[in-house]
Length: 155
Image (tube, rainbow, N blue to C red):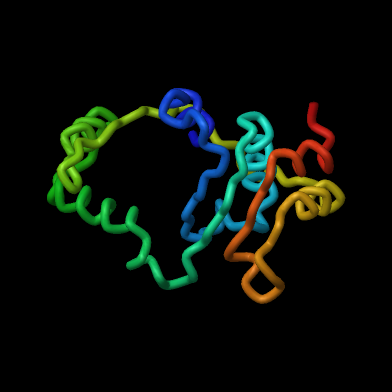
């Protein structure tokens, strides 16, 4: 979805060479998740952009703005029954947060589960990542496209 978002809005990002992704450090997107890191490295290389991953600490969701948006969306549908895809889309499309109307894209691509990089491949990806330091390195990660190219030997 990140790549789709970036590709469909390229004109907004001309001249941008670094993006920051704030994340909740959940099991699908933490900095030790092999497929997630592989995809972020591919994204950085493909788009020639540095990606910085900054994670919220556990149990600190109150600082994550998306959690407030989810709460607003839950109030918006006000306990109505979400019994069909169409109903969910209708509520999402009519949702307004902080004066901005939600933009809704239906994403039907299936995310494959159970796939992992080998330990050897993950070691290479670890070399691509610059972790802030040993104690909080899992919370702040930088992935530079040139390093991806050099270490993972992408064309």
